[in-house]
Amino acid sequence: MTIDGTGGDPGTDALERGNDRIRDAAKWLVASAAAVGAAMLAGSQLSSIGELPLGVPDSVENARLWVAMWGAVAGLSAVVYAIWTAVQILLPKLVLISDLEQAWTQRRSVLDPVVEHFRRNPKYLQGFSTPGEVVAAREELIVAQRDPATADDIRVELAARIADLDDRITAIEDTATHEALKEQFTRALHRLMLATAVAAVGIVAFAWSANPPAHQPTADLRNARLVDAYLRDADLRNAKLDHADLTNADLTGADLSGASINGVVWRNTICPDGTNSDANRHTCAGHLS
Image (cartoon, rainbow, N blue to C red; front, side, top):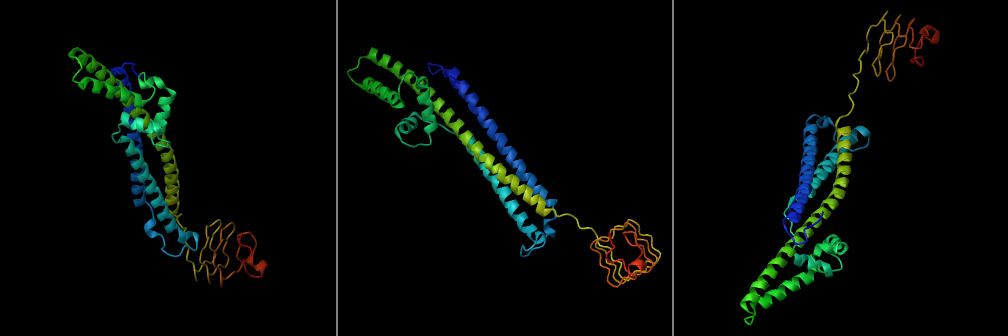
């Protein structure tokens, strides 16, 4: 992006357009971060976090609430930080030539990238070697203009030269402000990438922990009379079959994993593996798969 050598409007307009594009991008980042935060808050209403047990996290299920809380805090904190970082770019910013002059001679300054830009591109100093030279030249002209011994026609000439220097200073300040805004946006992007990673981890942790898988209902068939029952390929996982009567029942292919079978009556029962309980010492225990 170039600046008019006379400090005229074309260069200033180009810088303003560049600044507007940076600020538009910052507005988009603010809106995106706010949308993520709103989605997290809305998602919490659809979660089962209120049903999670509150206790010592000694198991996966008991730890879900704590993981959900950590994920929510981490995610929302990252979103707030991202919004705050992006908003800083939208705040008014102006780098004066006095700021640039001070940063030029300092060892470390927040304007170091801006100073480096001017050192690499001396043309942006409008014909001077350092910002201090511009300030000194203007002060010298002002002193000469105020000298009572200065003739009126010389005063008019000095006023024109001062006005020209003012235009040059304005161009330098516009360039410095634009470079400072670009550097701030670059730093903000790095911070936003970190905040986005933290927010993503927090959201995933919250979504996983606040939405535990639904437990399959357990069939309670205790003391049930299931004589001659046709239970082929039945889903009896974790079923309670204590003291049930399964005389002549057909359980071929049924899934009894985790089922409780204390006191079951096995008489001529076809076990899940296809064998007969009478041939298995009158039980299907050990033949449930």
